Image (cartoon, rainbow over all chains, first blue to last red; front, side, top):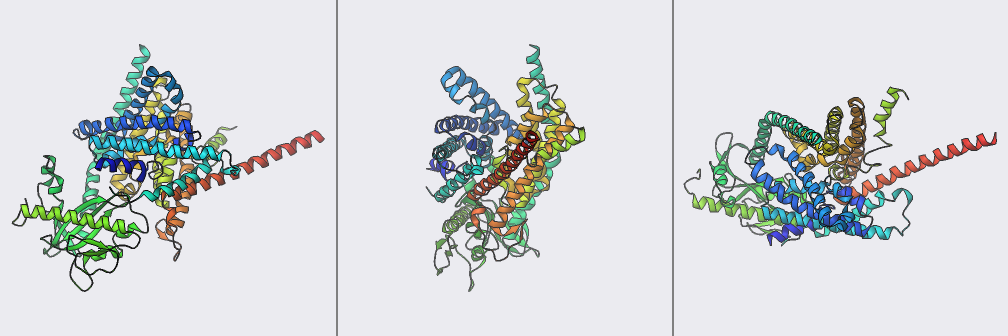
Length: 191
Length: 208
Length: 217
């Protein structure tokens, strides 16, 4: 039950995008179409889970024992940048179709604060390896959920008469605010 | 080949610069950071008793035992608190648990036998501003933990009720913030249970 | 254009025309998360500006020596180094502010503004101009953050910089919550766009009038 609580908390109760403000840039930039939202969400989830694993190992086996925890930021971001490169190469080799669908989004994932945020939080909360992985899955699920919700709403908004200054980022923020209000309803759930 | 070498050398030099610079900065700031953390903890721990002036760890080798793999639940972080004249005021225990939004960290003051609660001081929380944040020092809610009107103190295990309290183990909830109030009570109960367990296993004034 | 005028232009463009938050939509994560009060906004703004200036200057200085393929990795290491420097310094000398800003200090490293400026400007210009550009962008970022923080603190707590400014005002708690952050930023973006569109309209009209006059005479 504990693991499910971690997953649900990361995905819904403390949703990474709507409650913790991580991953806003892709949230605004990529949520125009449902299909791209799903692709971005899945790619990000994959990188999140891999990051959770590698950074946990890095923290437990290198940073802590050698007492160089101040190198955390530098080493984590390098790990993330390398992982994204690696994922890009693997996808390119394995499935050109998938690569073409995700293509532009992959390098963008490096600067997605979601990923580094996840790594830092998992260390702060002193999770075990398994807990970190579940946390990563939950964060990815929450990110995808927020992205998909926003994309669905924005596709509808295309047909609405949004005032000119508010079109694009402005109305996206207002919608996000409403979504955030709705998600507050999940707070306090206990398992 | 030349470009690959160039790439590797560049990255190596940059990495060296980064590692070196950070190592220097770390050496310069680490003692100060540790001192800040120690002062903050001491301030929090002393505040839970009126007139607290000196704090002494109850379990002298706690860090070593935790590093050796002991279960943290059996080794509560506890301090004996003395006033300026050296009289023992009680024990201060660090506790934490999940609140409404995220983790709540607090310091709990108890009598030397952990029988009754003498004070409560929340040091970290992410509760709803204006509602759950009423668990913080300075509000009405924590005052119940320092002492009850009409005399006496709360006796754990605690129960949260919504109306007026009637027994020495009852705590009045914050209006519209029942979950935060319950979270605090749960943390208190678990912390006291852990401390009582430790004191039972290590009688004769604690210490080691 | 004279060298001084172009330097001033580099500095000022970050404040409005190329405002990193309102026009370029960069650095939104810390903007929303940290702007609960003016003090937090100022702290984040100054920290980010410091990292921005230092890394821009250093990247500009080494831009000739870094091979194209590893430039992103190199920039990231440089930025991360300065971020850690700021993080450790804040923990040592401003522990309260460091606690309020929390994980968002190390997250400055993925603030798209910094990597964006490194790629778009510092890697192609001298250190002097890069520093000025960085200062302008940082100032624009900080100013926007502070305005957002002021609105949220005023409406959400009746305070500014921790001091009560509206006694007896029943605060709108939603302003301090995530929902409020999104709403206020959305309105600020709308306002910025409206102001800009009006300026473009009047510029276009002025141009058209001048052309008509020329054609008529």
